[in-house]
Image (tube, rainbow, N blue to C red; front, side, top):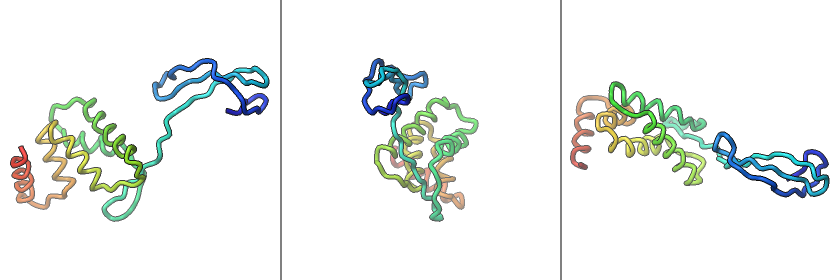
Amino acid sequence: MKCPFCGDQESKVVDSRPAEDGNSIRRRRECIACQRRFTTYETVESLPIIVVKRDGTRQAFDRNKILNSMVRAFDKRQVDVADLDRITTEIEQTIQNTLEREVSTDKLGEMVMARLKPLDEVAYIRFASVYRRFQDVNSFIQEINAFLEQK
């Protein structure tokens, strides 16, 4: 780490502790050359995720879109918002862990549906109706029958 005072490249870590936000490490360093102290923060590098939409356009991943779509599916249903936030975080982490920088909306939708199914059956069907673009009542019936067969 380059010293901000003298520009020397050599420093030693004097103290390390989690930062207040819990998402980084605060390090106190001392320059070997001038003995002055300075603070650095270490965070996890997260690469941007690009979502490929059905029409082929690309946009940056937005966790709020996933969260909002689940909130709509749970309209007038009992759900702990912390559960929905946890699901959103799980999906985001799963994508980050694959090291793929692009993910399709189809894959995202399947990931959401897989996590909604055990949480709430009605919310699952509501989400599936939008995600799979149900055109008529028969589409609903087919999805419900497929759901019941898997139980």
